[in-house]
Length: 306
Image (cartoon, rainbow, N blue to C red; front, side):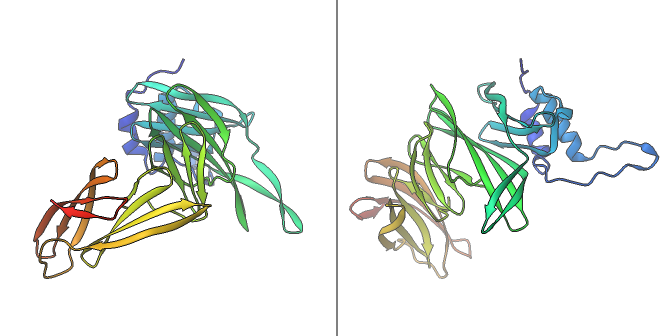
């Protein structure tokens, strides 16, 4: 029975730079004096808080990440190559995932043009985010060769009632998780994949979609907001047939006179059907500030300021 983690939140700020092992060459200290470096101390503390023995796990295949009150730890056992995945919810004070049954090979042989080459497991990369009433998490396994790499990604899904684990075919081990419409999120890397907390893939496009000022309308449609030389540029996009289409692009004047191009920030306050409310803040170099509420209709392209 794993104990609670009262020290875990404080620990994350200390170990952020040390949580993912990248490998190192061990050298025997002079006079046989054992000195623990910062990474070892942090790793041992993490293992203690998770209720596991750090000596049981490969220190080079060990990683912890933390986001929105969720921590997810992944590590490979030394004796049998079983993958440990543990996820702890600091808000609910309980483990959401606690499994160590899947055997992961440290090496695998794959075709490389007319040859076959052996890839080595170099990184284990976990991510997790709250989605709807549940969560979406994944553990990326990256096998490395001098000419490239090969990824395997295990997805962990829960809608708050049922949980499931499955391989995300074609997934990227180093993807970012971006909150999306309703019960879904985007896994964004060199490609972008929309998945729900039930494990359903809604769409995939072969390009990276940034999380900068992007706001979903539904699963496949969204708007982006940009600063276009002091104007608010609103673009509406749609994912269709594995491609991203721009449906419209408008530039909206700010109802204020500026002597230089201001910096703009955006905050979507409400989405009432097609009528949205977006707070816009414009700050000029000399300190002049304008704040107003843009009221666009994301279907008709009509808008007004308040």
